Length: 169
View (cartoon, helix red, strand yellow):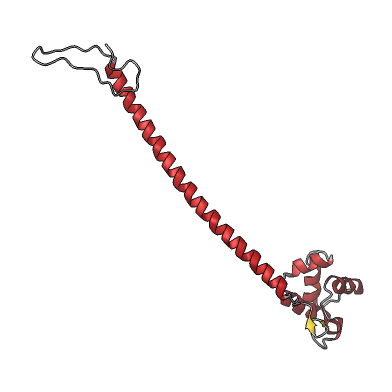
């Protein structure tokens, strides 16, 4: 009966038999073997179980009488409710609202920073493209100007390049 009651307790706790065995210091599968063979459990192990799981009712464990879990002053040990004063409650609510406002402000700031990053990346790309165009202009402005046809007016060098020698003969 004791082993069967322990199995019910383990199931109600939602833990595995091996986790229970480890928690009370039993070797691996020793409880399971005792349970399957209809064996017994030593008093030292029972004492250890009741120390580790103080909510377990020893009368229920040994005799199967009463509730599985002890009751303390009419309330279960598993569910303790503490009262919070109105001042504490309003203080907690105020802190919550302040944090909520701060989170909102931080989200806005993150949005602004993301927009700024996108703008800077676009500017950077534009400057890269412009630098590439300047290299092309500079390459052609270094070539000598030669009129291949006498009927056309002479060609002037472009002066829009950022290169210091561009447009100068």
